[in-house]
Each structure stands twice: as structure tokens, then as C-alpha cells.
Length: 250
Image (cartoon, rainbow, N blue to C red; front, side, top):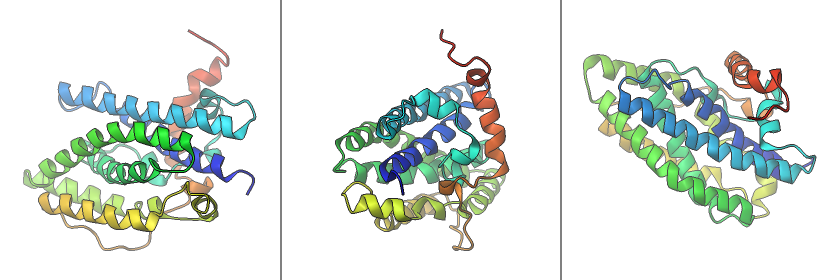
């Protein structure tokens, strides 16, 4: 393992960069004007978090790569995001369910990382936590509204939860990178976060009258660069301008 801290920060950044791009795809397509603006603002927050983390990753790597270089000039196999965030948006209920499942995880992760021994990681975590608290409030309210809504919205919300559940196990998957940084007081205990996450999810799903699926086989591989077919298509769109005009400024 050449540089575990670089790898760890890159994972944090890629989760938010990819999800931020997915949320930005709703710009101009939201179900109501107010929600269109809200989704765009969440996308901007996530991309802002990713920018800070990618800048830190570049500094840790020490090879002169900026946040832009890491965002726009890596291939899909070099991305370390979890599979959950790269899935296509689906309908509004699917997007809100995915956002809530990730938001709940992200709030707990940032809260724990706010006291990391690496001051740079701790500072970015504390800053991002403030905005993520708004995100999870927004997404959880929509999950409850849709789940406890009409027969159709309830059915769609339950279908989204059933489909997304098999991607949640990867959020709490630990490997040698986590172990190396946990020993240094940087990485957090994902098992402890998972217990709190499940309590938070169970509470919201109960209020939404939705049934949490039983754990089965979980999809994973994103942390090692093995992604779904969806990421390549997304990156082609996200990176096209920077790759077509490398070095351009405006």
C-alpha cells in the first residue's frame, strides 16, 4: 500500500463528486421549482465538498495533480466511489431514497471524522457536516412524505428501497486502508457507524411505513475501481469539456 491516506481521502472525494454530478442532472427537471433549486444546491454542496477533498488528496499525493486534474483526467477504474452513488437517478422517489441512505451515512461519518488526528481531514469533515445535516433533513422528509403518501408513491418508494439496499453494505466495508489509518487515529470505526446508521434508517422507514429489506448479497467493488456500467457513461459526460479543451480557463 503506497499511500493509504491518499486512497482514503480519494474515496471520500469520489463519493461526493459522483453523487454531486448525479444530483446536478436534476437541474431543470425537478418536480416543482422549489425542489429543482434545492436539488441543484445539494449538488453544489457535494461538489464543493469533493473539490476540497480532491485538493487535499492532490497535496497528499505530491505529484502536482490539482482537484480539477483528479476530477476530470482519471479513468473510471481509478475512481474509488461506492457503487450506490453512481446508479442512474431513476424517478424522484428513487433519487430521494438513494440520497437519504447516503446522507445518513455521510452525517455520521463526518461527525466521527471531525475529531480525526489529521487536522486537514478533521477541518473538512467539520465544514461538510454542517451542510450534510440540512441534506439528511431534506431527504428524510421526502422519504417519509413519499412512503406515507399515495398508494403509488408508497409502492415506488418501497421498490427504490428494495433495489438500493443491496448497495448499502459497501458503505461499511473495511479493508487494509481503513485499518492502517484507524491505527493512526484518522479513519473511523465503520461497524460503530453502521449500527447508528441502521437505527436512523429504521426510524425514518417506520415513519414512512416502509419495510427495511433483509440483508442479502451485497454489491461491492467500487472502492477497488470495479464499477457498474453506469459510471463510464456518467464520466464521459462530466469530463467531456475539460478533456476537449485541456488547460482552458474562463
